[in-house]
Length: 161
Image (cartoon, rainbow, N blue to C red; front, side, top):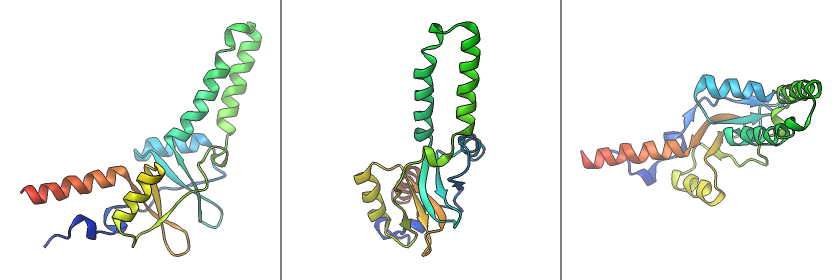
């Protein structure tokens, strides 16, 4: 017999083997991981492999908004100044570290937590993702709103079929 959705644990729904990024990596490295793996959030780890933050596509978009406001000043600059300014912005974007943009503090969840608890945690805090950690705070997976939608769809299919 199939377990009821409320009987499931985070490990039953999570995406295992979390793709992570170091807090010392650059934002361009995060862009590459987002694109390569088709994901929209990364647990951020320190040198001890502990989750210290989370970086989402939305966090990265905030940088582009700041750059856009800077770019609005371009028409006011001379041609030489404009080229220098553009190069400066490119360099700034290339050198920005994940730690400068990530969301912290981060909430994490253990794999043995009930998914109802996880869902409430995400709803109450407006999270789309929660890094899943082991007893040492090391990332082992990620649970997202997509995982919940998939579970409901699969459970609904089982009930209807």
